[in-house]
Image 1 (cartoon, one colour):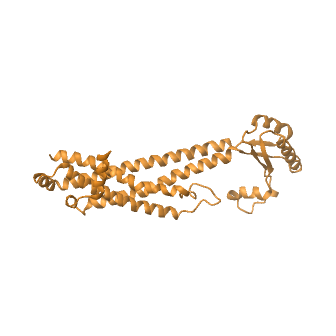
Image 2 (cartoon, rainbow, N blue to C red; image 1 turned 60 degrees about the vertical axis):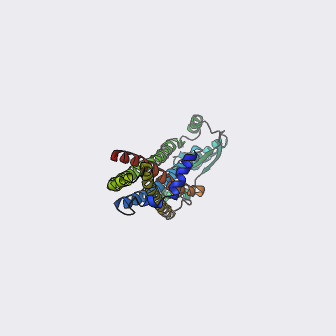
Length: 301
């Protein structure tokens, strides 16, 4: 543990002589900075997508689990009578918390996205909808359907189960896809840093040979490359993280309309999660560069 701590301190502190081994500019520098910034930017969005999908799946599951609808189709002269019968029946049904018939304005609002705001609900044979909210214990759906057939033949019970299951499943898979994307981004970052480190080490093969002649150890040389590439990755990832967080701030908040795109921003303490991205990117760069340095220096021996 003490040895690992000393390595971290040495990595942060650096060595002015060793730092001159690694070229301060060149395509490997630009490649490392651009890759780490771009991957951190994408990680922020993948993380936000995963968290938003999780929140949306939980919300859909909670809202639809305890809600159901009864649709009544009947001639106009029988509609009020059947609605009253259904409401009386629901009042006597164990497990039903509340039940109310939707007004014409509420039904018009439900149909507005498909038919526009000027839909004459009162003049069309639109079924009457009754919103049912159940208790935590729930009700016996099969028994309620049998009673509805006897009391109101035009009434149909919709438990929202067929809507709830695919929505929750889709949200769960989208959340999983977000985490898989983060893992793939981390792997791609490690691969690109390894490529850049290989190129830098190979380009400085003659310098490394001279350093060995004057007594420099492979550990001393490798530490210089590891430090430079780790700090470059850290700075690039920090820039990409800040850019990603700024982009998320420009996204619309969820407000009263909850959806995947409107709820893509972080909420509350979740804004602290992006701060973990730069250190993790630096850790990936440290591991990748250390492995690349050992492999290349071993091949140059």
